[in-house]
Amino acid sequence: MSTPPKTLPMVQILLCGAAIVMLAMGVRHGLGLWLLPLTQERGWTRETFSLAIAVQNLSWGVAGIGAGMAADKFGALRVIVAGALVYAAGLIGMAQATTPLLFGASAGVLIGVAQAGTTYAIVYGVIGRNIAADRRSWAMGITAATGSFGQFLMVPTEGFLIASLGWQQALLALGCVMLLIVPLAFGLREPGFAGGALARREQTIVQALREAFQQRSFQLLTAGYFVCGFQVVFIGIHMPSYLKDKGLSPEVASYALALIGLFNVVGTYAAGVLGQTMKKTHILSFIYFARALTISVFLLAPLSPASVYIFSATMGTLWLSTVPPTNAALAQIFGVAHLSMLSGFVFLSHQFGSFMGVWLGGRLYDSTGSYDLVWYLAIALGVFAGLVNLPVKEDPIVRTRGPTEPGLA
Image (cartoon, rainbow, N blue to C red):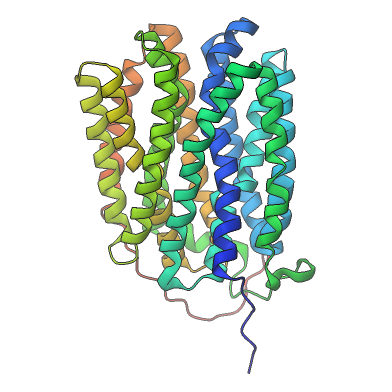
């Protein structure tokens, strides 16, 4: 009789995993606060800044696949520690960059790679392998909610640091903060990965990828996640500038982003809890339809601090609430052996959407003097994502044992 693999205590996973996501995502959500002070001092266009953040999102998506494979094979510890060190280097490089190329390499490539190793896909792999299925969606919701609290906590902190230290020193300070992730990562050191080895899995990487990409449900989840990335990164990066263009103070933008983070705590937790009893893709469809409606009302209503705060609270409830049901659906359909890797591939689509959202925001603003076209596109894509999630089937795949195919274990 084989001995069941040891697992980490659930409380330990939730505390350490949530703290890691809180720091990594919290800093990331405040990067839009640097758009105006940095571009004005360097004499760069908004497109220059936007392109670097677009590259960041694309780098995050591409690197996320390799990070997921490494975490599935060798454990999350090594991946998270490496990600934290690269994150610190990227923030320091962002502060020192004097050309668009260096800025793109630091704010774009380095921070993007770092986020791949310190955020949801890696932590959710640990949750999937160590927490029972009947509590998995809830645990993912807890982690996402805490990451959202990081936005509420870190965005005002970043605004305070910029105001008190200047934008360059603020980035250096955040680089030091990122090193706190290293000791937290040891709380996610899984016994099953001792010595860098994992017990043999039923599928190779090649088999797992072939199975997933042949499933229509995987394709539809991937398409919907593209829209999530487009919407949240466009709003997160460009809304501060949009509000200032409309005559509102920078404090309104800081409070708006903080409200998104605060209400996202509620939204992500609720999505995780509801995912235990409701069809996860129905939750996703509701979120995308509600986003389209919320943006439409925001654009039609008279703009004021009050309307911004109402929009932020509503959008915050819908912000990253897509993350727990998407990843829980993947775990339910395909199992957890390759969860970090499959989440990485789905997340790559999210990051292609992020690239398009942030880049088009800067590009169309520079060419038209307005963000209107991108807002309208965000509405249309929300309707599209709501529709494509409706036919997704969440039933677990039934596999028949056969001869092992050659491929990466």
